[in-house]
Length: 355
Image (cartoon, rainbow, N blue to C red; front, side, top):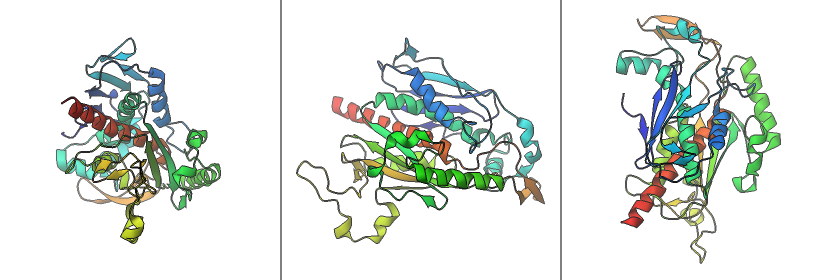
């Protein structure tokens, strides 16, 4: 299997399956001399871990990260950082009924066709459990980018959405509720909706907004390595993501150029930021902001018609512990992937400056 690595200079390679012994990763290219706050890294994992509230999967995993290399006395050494997160609460029997059945909208069918074999226990490598390794790497990238602020939050669940621009929100309120929405009133409606859907044995999707602040101008490598293109790739690599838009996004297509253009101030900043902090594929120093759309979780507890490996029509029903909505736990994953992208471009910029 190819495609297990992300990044060019700040590079992450992940390994492991949902119901294997462990998942983990190797970070190559992290600069030496970074004083790491290991508790902060674990806190990021705690934000993503299962079982943290009633509106997420009840699989109980401590998700404790163990570092094996690349760190000495809390400081990065410049050598590869190897780490492992052990799986402790697998219930593989919950998946025995789909051993030869393809779940609708899952990777079961495509993995089988591509590799001729699949790990049906929780989806194996295709499971979103893999993203825990990304969160570890992203937490380290955040500490490398200590002057850059990255904040993601839930901005929509189904048809319930925030109607305020991010500039009017208090990011300190993101972690004050289980849905990770900085507006308490909207958060309560979102939580209620997810609880209602969960009782029906169904699932629901949503949107996460991410804002990256204090990014210097000049990050990005046209033509094919534009900054927003790499951010889009990063987000679309996350399980269940169906869409990515930055700046004015699809709404911008409805506007006139005379209205959409961001007029300059004398210092090079712009009066508006419909460009989303990126112009010509290069950061312009303004806030970078984008939306990431997540589909409803494919596994439902309702009966569904599907096919098995013999091509026969069968009926199946999800069992075990599943998220009724992935969005709350995906917030730190979006932040992590954003951090990996920005860290990579910051190192590239450093390389170009030194040359």
